[in-house]
Structure formats: structure tokens, C-alpha cells
Image (cartoon, rainbow, N blue to C red; front, side, top):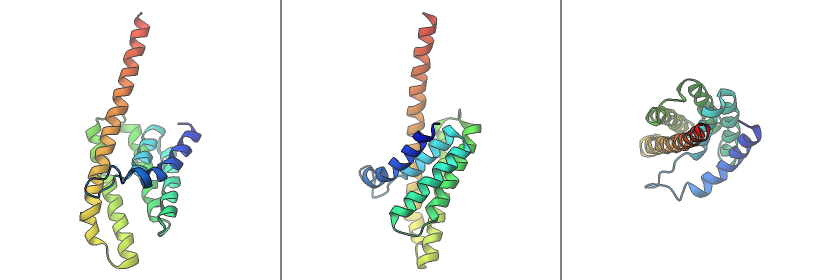
Length: 167
């Protein structure tokens, strides 16, 4: 992937999360759009690109959230690295497989964020099952739909190219 494209996506996704995620929230649960973008960048660009994107997005999310700098940075870095490593091996896997893997990744992120909240305030375990599990499900669903749409678009392009070649 082009470095400017990756940087542009990373800089665009944080304001997008702040503005758009509330519009697509279901019962107050919002998908983690920065995590989805970082996973996608890692999937397409490899572990180094995914890790760099995760580092940048995590830093931006931590900075704009007004909280402690570091928890989102570590979580997004890991999501980008894992997405990149999985992209090398599972790029052709179906969307359900990626959805299940993303559910696990974002659930681990939710547990990590719960631990950091508990560490700072002494509270937050209730949020684990009220927010982290539904958010992980919703985000995994967004990843599955995104992969399905991308694959459909790529299949249409391949079909057009095949028709052009056979003419």
C-alpha cells in the first residue's frame, strides 16, 4: 500500500469515528472503526504497514480521547500486526473466518481497555460484558460485511478483465 494512502486513512478514521459511529450505533454500541481500518490496512499491506498504521491510529485515538496515552496505542498496534500476519496466511479465507478472528481480537482489546480503566479508577469490570462483548460482535460484523463487499468488487473487476481478454 502507498504510504500516503495509509497516512490519509489513519488521519481520516479518527474524526470519522467521532462523527459517524454515533449514527450507526445499535443500542448505544458503536463499532470500532479505527480498529477495522487498521485491521484492513494490515490485511492488505502486511504486518509492518499494519503495525505502523496501528501505532498512528492508536496514538491519535488516545490523544483525542483525553485519557491516558498508551492503551489504545498498544491495542491498535497489536490489531495491525495481527491483521498483517493473518493477511499473509488467510487473505483468501472467507469473511466468517475473519469475523471470528476479529471478534477475538476486539474482545481482547475490550478486556485490555477494561483492565486499564480498572487500574486507573478501581471500577470498570461491569463494562466488560455490557460494552466490550457487544462492541466486539458489532465490529466483527462490520469487518465481515467490508470483506464481503471488497471481494465482490474484486470479483466483478476480474470478470470484466476476463471478458476483455477473451474478446
